[in-house]
Structure formats: C-alpha cells, structure tokens
Image (cartoon, rainbow over all chains, first blue to last red):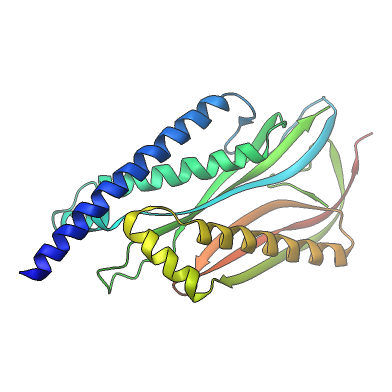
Length: 150
Length: 107
C-alpha cells in the first residue's frame, strides 16, 4: 500500500515538473527558431557546393545536447509497451532534443550564409532496461559545414 | 586547418590526398555529477553536465583528428563524420573521421 502511494506521489510530481520543463523548453525553441528564420540557410544532404562568389570562411559547426524524459513519461511508455503503438511521451522528448541541437548549431553559425550537408546523429546513452528507475537519455549531435561569402 | 563535411572544400582545388584520419575519445563525469544528473533524470529536461561532457568529447576527438592530419602534412579535412556510442552508463564515446587532403585556392 505504501509503495503504491509513494509511486503515485513520484508520478504526480514528475508529471508536473516534466510538463512545466517541456512547455518552457518548447516556448524557448519556438522563439529562437522564429528569430533565426532564413539565417543561415540549412541544406540537408548537399554533397558539393559550386559557387562563383568569393568564399571568406569555411567552418565545421556543431551543436550537441543530452536530453532525458522524466519518470512519468517513462512509466507511461512502459505501460504502452505492452500494447504497442506510438510512444507519444518519448516523441516529444526526441523532437525537443533534435530541434535544440540544430538550433545550437545554427546559433554557432550566425553570420554565415549557408550550412551545407547538415547531419543529425543521435544515440541512447542509458538504455539499461533492467532497472525500472533508468530513464532513457538521448545524446544528439548536429553538425554541418558553415560557408560565409565575402 | 579547413574542415568540411562535404566532398570538397568550396572555392578550393584538392591537389593531394592522404587518406583516412580519425580521432576518438571516451569521457566520463565524476560521481557527484552523475548523481545530479540522476536527479534531473527523474524530473526531465536537458542534462547540462552530460551536454558539457559531450561537447568536451567532441572537441577532443576533432582535435586528435586534426593532429593526425597535421602530421601527414595536410591542410584540410573533408567529408568529416561524427559518430557517438555509449560504452557504459555515464560515459560517452565520440568518434570523428574524415579524409585528409591538401588544397589550394582556385585560379
């Protein structure tokens, strides 16, 4: 009985904190994305870059983030795992992580005209499912080549 | 050292190739930070200390790759890829690899 009460307390606390943090994070992401519209332009997958303009600077830019879900999300996901289907609680975590990593990369390339061949690399660094307490953490690196014209 | 993750260096001609250069590093944080991250893990959000770890690891891996390229006499690395893997909980490996080349400005 006490265990169930303890679990309920943890779940409700992490639900509240998790959703507050998520909401704030999404707000900041949206704000920064709006501020960065069209500067610099990102191209995913361009292999070569032919231009007649004079190039001033070429640089490898990266952005990285390690993000985790919360206890509540993990609990919901483990229940959902029984029935299958979309794990919406983790989808939002990964979405946040990727957008944050791309934003950090773009913020490092401010002043550049293009980011060519942007790539996103991600890995789960805590997929130890043997213990119930382990919440998946996702490490995400975004990188690309920033090109600045004269 | 010019670094790109595309197959050329824009505005430059490749005059010599030196082959693959790599750099990797495995980093772990101390137990106190691990504990802090564990608490943060419960409430969710970004794990700043782990992000820092990842940034350090990425810098170190790229630095090692650059060293190797320098020793070969290259002045640029093209087609760089970054890869990550987890060795144990709380440690991250970052692996960077690319092709070392010598370039000169066009024309």
